[in-house]
Image 1 (cartoon, one colour):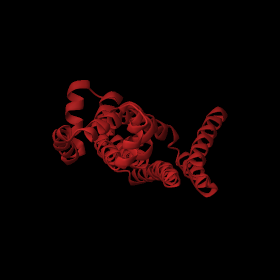
Image 2 (cartoon, one colour; image 1 turned 135 degrees about the vertical axis):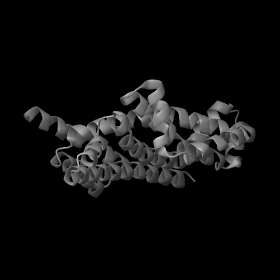
Image 3 (cartoon, one colour; image 1 turned 180 degrees about the vertical axis):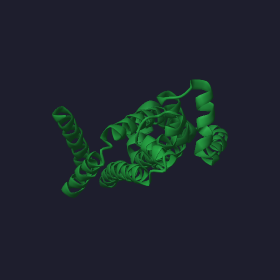
Image 4 (cartoon, one colour; image 1 turned 60 degrees about the horizontal axis):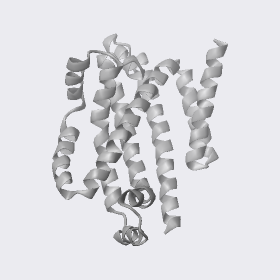
Length: 242
């Protein structure tokens, strides 16, 4: 039991460190620590860690897919005209529908939950990466070409850094959508806070369901504030660079 408390405190300290790295604001750091402590006080720590684990994997896969696809469609209007209707369709389909093919192909558990979450959450990141690249001043890229930079160097050293505020906003939206989907994915065997809410509904236990819902709200606030802080910091760097 004592070891579990030590583990919880280590994770809370890590989240507070990440919050400080993102914002440099002591108030936000304390708020994030208190928020995570509240989840532990609800006795939902293990479920929250399961939810966070699935979320982090889903977000990582979404970034690996979303940023390159966003860069590709930013470079080609023809590709964009093909990809945009697909993204529209992905964002129009109700979230529950994604669970059906995921279960048919991969059964129950974490894997179909992650796949359904990635498909549901990746469109905003693709769109905002595309938007960020397109908003980079053409004169800046032309200056890079004038100095002999290759297309990859311009992308890596000019376009991506300048587009980073928009990309971070995409990651923020993807994170919020991933959290929503992970909760729904409890219906197909994904463990976590969503399972607590589902059990509360199935057993007519409003207290359990309410605690699970509050824990989800707390997680959403933590992820939203940290990603928003990183985005604001990137924006300030971009403004200072100009």
